[in-house]
Image 1 (spheres, rainbow, N blue to C red):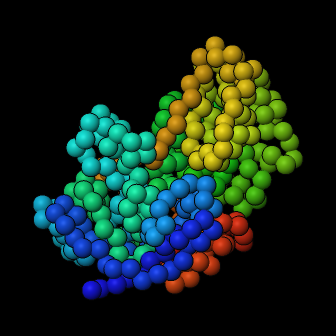
Image 2: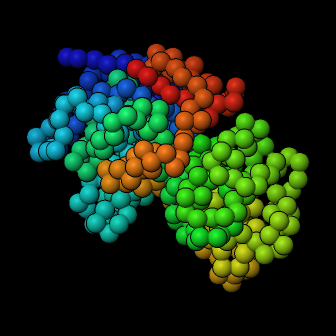
Image 3: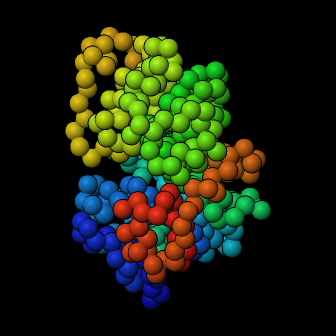
Length: 351
């Protein structure tokens, strides 16, 4: 029996390296040899016990790799091809997929998120991909692993927030928090046609990257009240779209308070506590405000489009990869990422 090294969730506060069997390929599956992956903020929620997964599960949902083996029924691919797979792996056949909600595959909330949630993930030497025909995306020649590393989740999520916000050409948009997802939301807002993009953060390195991603105005929330400042900038009108990319009560409420009547709050944060809705901020429910949540779209067509954006050069997400570790150092990488030390944004993990 072949074995592999993998990062395994054992209990809240503990993700450790273990030896696990290399997965066996069945009909419709593909086995991917992982060449690069990364750690997500959601993995930190799992590590802290804020999001429940079963002990013994391999963590990780952002795979870049090479096809090692193909199961029966998987056509149009061959062993040795470089591929990415989205963090969301829809079956492509159920009612919810065919109804246009692939992230909710199977009818359960977040049902399309399988890797590192309901099945073994990709912080390992190998990954078994179910429904491979619907989920394998070939990496264009000339693109490196790190260039496409954001596509499976962070880029798809951030862009999804801009898309769900229904940004129009000429809109004013604010993005609260400039972590990796917020930075991608900023880039997505730029691509969607927003002409005034305001971002809120306090970490100098992140605010500098935000400018490279398309931010026009950067607000340090430790220096000024961001709500007052945004209302001043918009002359009291408010923004057309507010994107919440942190997952806290404070940022969610701030988004509501800077929205114009009839505006859209696009929520990307993973909330680990109870949210409350201030009546004045939503005009007692009569302000025509729209609140929409988004789980990053998945499937190979979504990945193909994101790969096209990277290949076009219209977005350069390389600055988001700030640190690099081997898989055998992943426990050290988790400690760095969980505590947000040393200016970390995203970590490239290589088996």
